[in-house]
Length: 196
Image 1: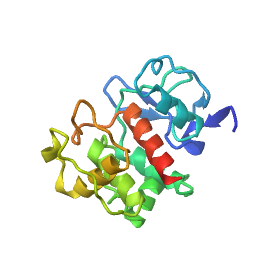
Image 2: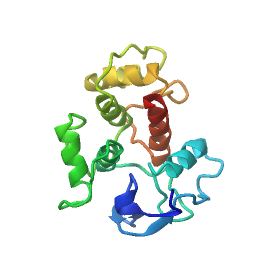
Image 3: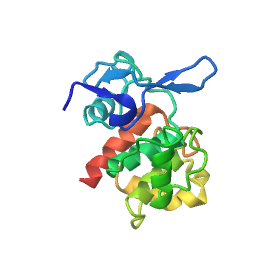
Image 4: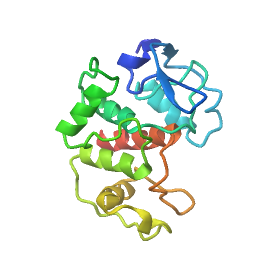
């Protein structure tokens, strides 16, 4: 595995900068895959962050920062899953266009709102569809907020719980919450382990 990779084209998540207004700027900055992220040390998802970066599924926003508590967009996840499936996502009018086209073609997403932050239930639903929408047999009753899972995401959430992809936090699934980069790293790591 190379020590340095181009984040925009060779890694599953593009390198981005956070702007003062909350928007993101994407560029071709090189970030080391084996970087030590000061903001990930001691984080509850440190192991997942380190593993997904080492596997090339994720990158830091700089050589020393991962931004674990920053949200992830729908377009980023569509692109990650397209690349995980072996699709070349280079080209297109936007950085996420090829990933979005792949997601629509393969029934993973309808491709809407690529710049919107992804919720936990949307993340799980895209993974569930990527996995072929398998039988869902997990129980959501043990989570105090199970009633807040949208109807379209119920089977996906049941599947994710049954397979240990989603464990919840403090007895809650938090399906409507935006998924942070740390949460996406942890969920992706569990999904990849399950998919092997």
